[in-house]
Structure formats: C-alpha cells, structure tokens
Image (tube, rainbow over all chains, first blue to last red; front, side, top):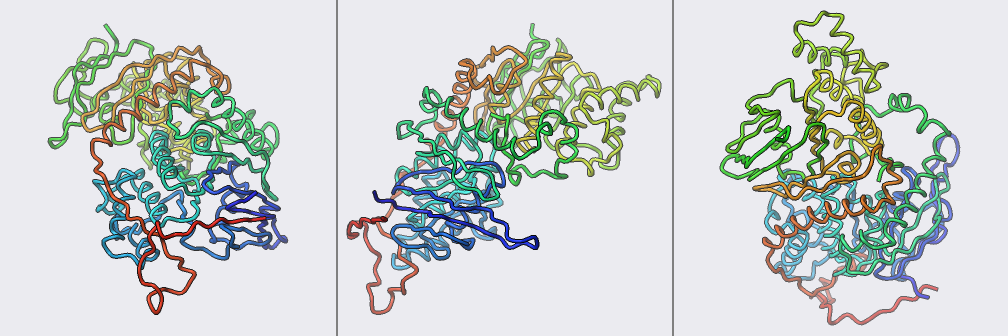
Length: 294
Length: 300
C-alpha cells in the first residue's frame, strides 16, 4: 500500500543537565495522499514537537520522515505551515505578506501570474476587500485568514497546522474551520493538524490520532471519522456518530489529564489550584485541554 | 410587562449603523445569553442597557423605569476586569459598597464585602493588589464587586473570554452556582455558544454587524444544575447547539457571498527550491499544471 507521508520510529530527545529527556519515542504514522489527519493530546504531550520536526523546524533525534518519496531534511516551501499566531510582517500589507513566499516559489512565473495567485487565495479566504490592509488594521480572525492563504498560496505538498485557531473565539473558529475545509478540499493537500479542540478535530479530519502522554509520547488510538464530504457544519453536528465520537475524545483527554495530576488535586481542592494559576494568562498561549469543558 | 424591556432600539456611530431594531424582553430572575461574533455590537448593546451610552432611538426600561444613566441597580462585569490597580481586592469591592450604601456603618460595609469575597472563593487573596492576581482571580473580584452592590440585574460583558479554558470552566461553574443561589436577572454577552447553553435559560443570537439585530430566541429547557458530561447526551443540548451555531454561521455567510467576486487562479506549478534555479541554461518558464506528468510514489 502506498503512503504519501510516513513518519517512522520518530524520536525526539533533548539533552538536559539531568540527562537526556525523551519527549517523543517511536512515533509511527502514515498518511495517504490528500488525507486530513489530526493529532490530539494533552497539553505538553509532544504533539507540536512532532509537527515541528515534520516542518523541519526542529531536528530529528531518531527515526525519519518521508514525504512524497523523499526523506525530509530541513524546512522547505513544500510544506506550508499555519501557526497559532499568523506571524505576519507588520510593515507589509496582507497582500505583500502572501506575495513574499509566492515570489520565491513561483520565480519562473510572470509578475502578473504571481499577483493573481495571491489575489485568488486572499479572496477565497474572504479577504477580497481587505487584502491591501496592514496586519494592525485587521482583526485577529482576519490575520489568521492571511496565514491560511499564505500557506495554501505556495501550493505545498503538505499542510501543517499547529493549533491554527487556538487564539480565536469559538464562533470565529467555527467560521475559519469552514474556510479551511473548503480550501483543503479544492486543493486536495495532505494535511496534519495539531489541536486540543475536539469539535475542530471532528469537523476537519479523516482520522484522529490520539497521542499518549509525554515523556516518551507515541500514537495511541486512531479514530476514523467518516462524516460525508464535502462537510457542512449542520449535517456534521446532526450526524448520529458525532456526539459518541466527541465523548470518546473528551474521555481520552480526560483520562490523560487525570493521569498527569495526582488524584484529588483536580476536583477536590479548587482554591489551591487557583492560587497556582499563571499571573497573566494569555488565552492563546495556554494549551490546557479542557477536561470538563465541552 | 417584562422586567427589562428594549423596544426598537438603534445606535449609530459616525453615521454607520451598529445596532438596529433591537427588541428584547427579559423576565425577572431570567438568565439570558446574547451570542454573537466579535465586532457585531454586543458590547454596545450592553453599554446601552448599562446606561453608559445613550440610544439614538427606541426605549429601554428596567422595572418600568426608563434607563438614562448608569446606576447601582445594574451591576456590570467587564471583560477587562476594570479594577483600580492601587487598591487591594477587598478595597476595590469596598469602594463599590461604600458608594451604593453611604449610610451603612463601617462594620456593616466590611461584613458585606467579606460575604461576597467568600462567595467567590477569594478569602485567601483578599488583600492582594490586582497585579498580584491571575486573570481568573481578577475576574472573581470584579464579579464580587458587582454582586456586593446587590443590583437588580447583572450585566456580564464577555466576562470569561480573556481566560484560559480551564479557568473559564471553573468560573462558569461558579456563575451557575451564584445564579442558583440568588436568582438575579442576568444578561450575559458571550461569543461561546457552549458557555451560553451551559448557563442560560434562553439564548438570543446577535446577527453580524453593521446594523446588527437580535435573532430568534432559543430556549434552553435543560434542568439545573447542569452537568457538562450529561449535556453531551442530551438531545435538547444538541438541538440548541446546532440551532444557534447554524443561525450565526449562516447569517454571516450571506454577508460574505454578497461581497466576493470571482478570482482566477493561474494553472502553474511551484518550483522546487532544492534544485538549482532554472534561470540559466534551463527552462525559465513556469510549468503548467497540464504539463505535469503523473507521478506515483511507492513507499514500501
């Protein structure tokens, strides 16, 4: 059977003063061409480490990754990454931010063609009216739309999404998931996403890989998500499998969340836990999964 | 007649309509959640009810009296806490109690503050300054301050949006408990449909701006206290969730489709930057998609 992307025995070890820390160990996952797979797991379990190795932004300690028949070595434009925060250059307009990468990858195309590509993707993500604005003039949700357009405009072989909507409010999140799923369907890009949002994983994925807790994280269960495509929010929410799957995922996350805390600290003594809250929580940066959240 | 009543309320900023034809009636003791996208005008709506902004047209009444200015019978909790940084948690709350009940004795005031500090589980941190408190704890102070004034109606403006998911869940539980204890009339503004379903008796979506208006009411007929896990099985929960989300997303979609024009994507393929540039000697022309030969990749 042919696979487009293969991660085999992928391992990440960091050297620490206390000896080597094994974050990810023998991580195996295969993706078919055009498949959308989500990695879900408790905060700090190493999901983003896997994704950043795939992006080439983090060295691989052991094992390897094959993309379209070639072993990966370093970062490249054949993998488009959408980060949690879109990381746009503030002195360039949305259009120029996307054009920057397009100019590199389509250097043999004409200037007009390159501009057409940028225009196309920015319009498709819903920024037809605002593409010549600077990031500071755009809302958080609009900036993330630019981030999505930038990744797709390079026509990468693979799309990597690292909690792409983690900083957005839940309604904007629902909306951008729809934008993403439509673009993904049109371009048929193989995608790997990391998230802790159960609804997001269910709406977008073909398969959901649950990651066991770090250290030495690996792939646990893999769930197949068979809602018919193209997907619209309403039929997915009304699908008889939706809430059973949702519950399974929440349970998985809850189980792992509980394993992390000594028994009793989570529910029995809330005031004590509250005193340990970080001093200035920034909603996007905290990756706690919401154990008893929806 | 309803307790809080808004009729044909409209608000315009610099010539652009923000809110338009807002009709809302909230019964005494009811918990109503207004859900909408950011930028829709939710905060403007709440500011009108709080009396912080005047409406351009229409009438707003609370308990039969017209709303024209802010007042202690309407307690407001803001997203950004709005605490005085040089006062401790205790003093911040005392300030409000002091303003509302100037004729009380010092002991009475302190007792009132004490009671609400305990109610939001802040007794251990009562003498800390806001800067020494986490976001969740600051919001507790803000909530205690609003409650300690003993308002007739509580207006919550995205009180939990700035908090991380775990703290948000804890404070949602606490809000539900506080509401059960003294059954105040509450108007909650939020952008999280799940939060609204968990807390409210009735959900009213606010359509996307400009010229936002309120959509149909979605009653949440789920008995209290509500349990998040059990909600997942509840057909009423699924129906309300789907209804609210679909209403808001489709109202937004209509707006988008009206704006888009048809763009064209050139059918060219990206270059492989790992190979030497083609500018010299090689072909310096972009590869058309139609020219690409099908490649099949076999991995094991």
